[in-house]
Amino acid sequence: MKQYKQAFMAAGILIAIMAGYSACSKSADKQEPVTDIQIQTNVKFGKILTDSAGRTLYFFSLDANGSSGCTGGCLTVWPVFYKPDPRLSAGLNAADFGVITRPDGSSQTSYKGWPLYYYQSDAKTGDINGEAINNVWFVAKPDYTVMLANIQLVGQNGVQYNSQLQPGQGVTQYITDDRGHTLYSFSPDKFKKNTFTKTDFSNNPVWPIDTITAVSNIPSILIKTDFDTVMVYGKIQITYKGWPLYYYGKDSSVRGNTKGVSVPSPGVWPIVNKSSTVAPQ
Image (cartoon, rainbow, N blue to C red; front, side, top):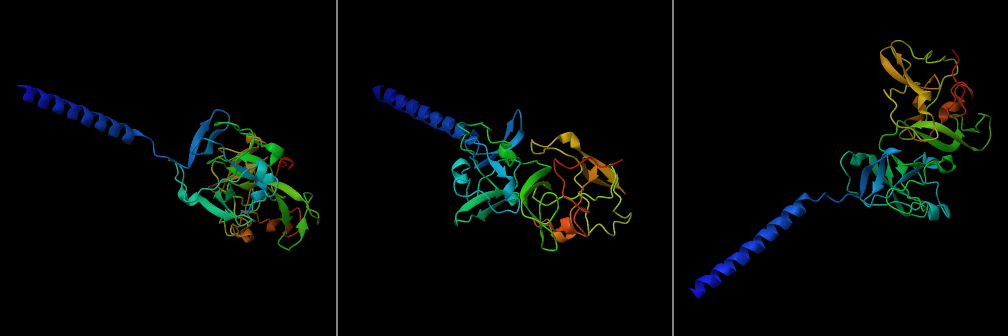
């Protein structure tokens, strides 16, 4: 009898161990996979990109050409984010991520061509204290409709232009699409009236219309109601302050190119920004 009792107790212990192991396994199976870059939802800013710990990531508008303009002491305040082959949360596309080589030879992760940074003064998870600092730093978002660039304008003629579109040096801020491609207005256009594009779109390759169908998110220093859309022969074109927006074909879809500002002469196809006047009726 004693032997049967000992065998029964041993079996009970084994069953308990196996049950505990099974429970732990099921618990482990339910754990979310670890991601290096994830989408978080913020009450004020909506969807934002963070690292695995929930620390906010940022874009720098001086990086519109795809290289990093933050060097030296700037990196103390805005440390680089780098993760080779990052694991991504649902809703993110691996094709949107890349790696740039910085001036010092180190690597940095980019999203849609924008190098990613932290902000030194974000002390804890969920902090977004770097938004709009100096009007050039913006929280990284997966769903920007437009972004902002701050770079030297250079026309197709090779001449450098200032913000008044006069020959000269100086960084100018202007609106781009979400991947840093320059957007232009056409000076003869009227308020929400495209006067350039032909009905058969035969001249569209020269100055392609920006066919974003809706404005979702924009940098916080811009006003969302300044954006709208207009129908152009069956296609939707985005507008800013009433100006229909175009790309320049000879920018060749290269981010940071501003060749159109000199064609056929400065002021005919200007960039647009906060200082742009409302299009005439």
